Image (cartoon, rainbow, N blue to C red):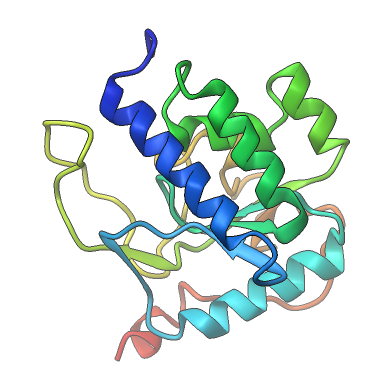
Length: 195
């Protein structure tokens, strides 16, 4: 349990909220990026693909998870300020990378009201690469995490936000009920994409 949050974690949460407030209104979408992560090679193509595919299937989606930690989470601009307020209001309860999942999964009454039945999607492929091995918030070294265009499943991300290969074996998002048409297999193209 997160027992009130260490001061550095609460500060990190406030810092994330401050960035959201500055970025609000600057673009149609916001994506979280950490300073120890880099967008994979051809990541802008992957980003365009996932935003277009998700929007066609779920036009009102709330969030798309395409990496791990507080990274690779896409939001519509209209959701940026409400999420900043949620972070500020709940900073003492959980760290920001847990609050974001709680928010878009609708796990509290407040977040459920904002979600309003909209989908949050787990993209099958990780599109960011982790550069470091240590967390700024944890003493122990990080476990091996997915590299560019490797599958993004639980336990790397929480089950509620993960891609589920058994539920959606022929698709590249979970949920997948509204998805149609062919998919790009970023995993199969991994070698060519990283050259």
